[in-house]
Length: 198
Image 1 (cartoon, rainbow, N blue to C red):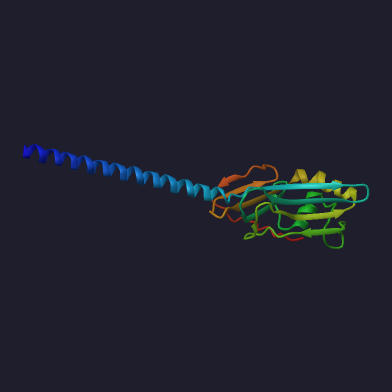
Image 2: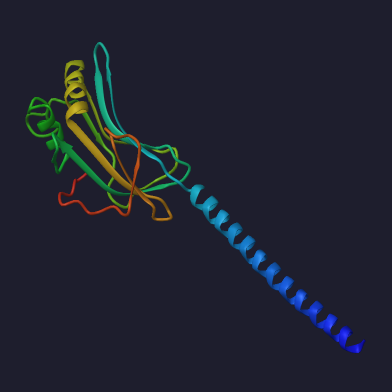
């Protein structure tokens, strides 16, 4: 009787130990899943989504053309690279972009300047673009015929590519042709460094 009791106690202790191990494993898995969900929630709560755009206005007496970016996401975007190409060839400055993109008909600087107002906003690497922020990298105010020329030529010939990262160092590229951001491993330094100036 005593042996049966000890055997029963031994089996009970073994079942209790196994049950404790199973509970510990399940509890660890639940805690891991919760931590992963919290991490994913934190990551998504700072996710940027940048759109690059061109826009124009042509009125009776005045006109304008703009190139910019807007962060439509819910978190800040760290700008890591800006590339501007005309007909697929990288350019160094907005002055080069406008002159080449309009077959040398429009100039934003120098003695041949035929644009009334030129505004340039910094989109250089390291700039942090908050959620809902809109940055007009280039804004040109001019006569209606020049604005029409800028719209017709630059919209089709100029590609503005932006590489940006989230606070979690997840990175994307986007341009004014493919407006949906594409994930990339990192923002690589371009061989031709675009100077975001007039």
